[in-house]
Structure formats: structure tokens, C-alpha cells
Length: 58
Image (cartoon, rainbow, N blue to C red):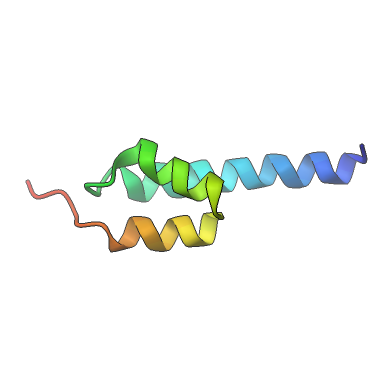
């Protein structure tokens, strides 16, 4: 396996977790489900699914 592919996979995972952590914890979908959608589909689609979820009311 080429080292470039390993770097791409690591960047993909880090990007997915950043999206899920920063946005998902403030939404009803939560951190876990936002990570699930971001990993299964893509970080961009996971971002839109998370943003469509309702925000948590205080």
C-alpha cells in the first residue's frame, strides 16, 4: 500500500471526526450518529445531514 493512500485515509477520518464533534454535539442527531453518517457516506453528506437536524434547545 502506498503511503499517500494511508495519509488520505487518516485525513478522511480526522475530517469526519471534526465535523461530527463540532456540529453534532449541538444538534439532536448527536455525536455518534453524525460520525456514522459521515463515515458511511462522506464527510460532506454527513455535514448536510447533521445540519438538517434540529438544534438542541436550552
